[in-house]
Length: 181
Image 1: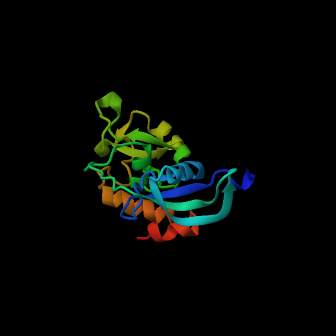
Image 2 (image 1 turned 30 degrees about the horizontal axis):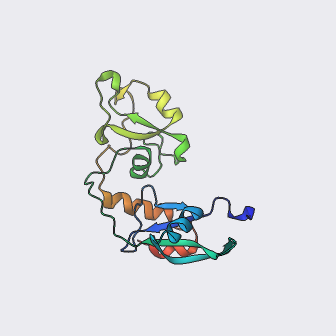
Image 3 (image 1 turned 60 degrees about the horizontal axis):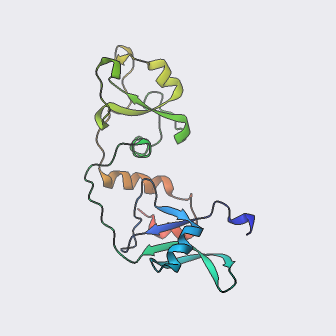
């Protein structure tokens, strides 16, 4: 196998040609996409220029696939996890205002756990390591500034919009039509 295929991914769309998920973006490895194709679970929407070969089959690597069966999502409030929190806060520390990668951000309890703060959307913000350490167990407005934006519960639609904004220009051009605003 060519080394140029390392890290190649396939965008996975629901049967309605929308990504299954925007946060995280629904992608799989090209190997998983080919397996799903051979198991007749997906349709190929777009392909890369690369072809893979087995003794009996040659296939172009799918860049975009759609599921043959529609998958519904019932969650009204997005799950609170690193990906969704950092999306809500645009990968920006809510104390210094600088942008960071996910690896450089942490959760911060605005009302510290030591003071009875709980882990929920309205008490958690993204913070860089330096700001999080500096804030420690200080209360907002008492020894440390309040977050730039007050924490809130985002909607699924809002997280999808933010994800599409941040994804623009970062993926293969065959994905663009499915990630448009």
